[in-house]
Structure formats: C-alpha cells, structure tokens
Image (cartoon, rainbow, N blue to C red; front, side, top):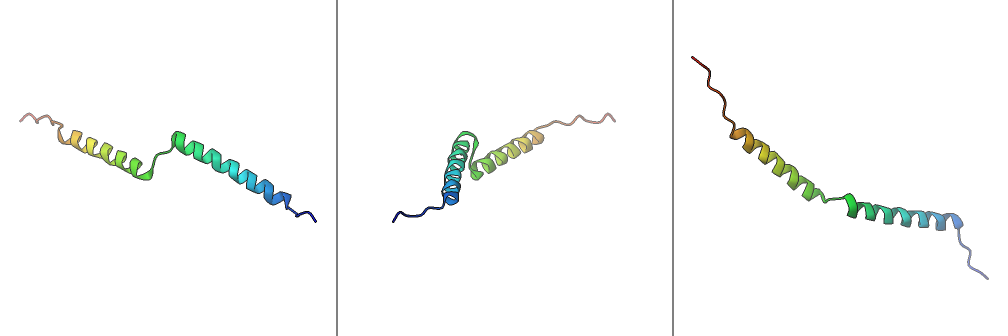
Amino acid sequence: MAELINLRSVRKAKDKATARAQADANAVKFGRRKAEKALEAARLDKEKRDLEGHKITPKDPE
C-alpha cells in the first residue's frame, strides 16, 4: 500500500523553506549583527561628544 501524504503540510514545508532561503539572502545582503550596530552607534556617539568638547564658545564682551 502506498504511503499517504498530507499535501497541505508538504505545501507549508515548501513555503517555509522558500521563506527561509529568502530571509538568509536578505540577511547577507542587508543585515549586520547587533554587536556591529551597537559598536557603530557607540563610535558615532563618541565622535559627537568629542566634537562638542572641542568647540570654542565666543567670549561675551564686557
């Protein structure tokens, strides 16, 4: 006797595999790790703080 298969589950598995492949492709194309994003944000924040620290404020005439 032949083995019965549920076509709905086969279709869902195929769709899930396709979606996973697309997600992996997008991750390679656009994605960065969370640590890389945090490192870049910290560097930008430090650059802004350093720039603010070097600003010269004009003296008020007395």
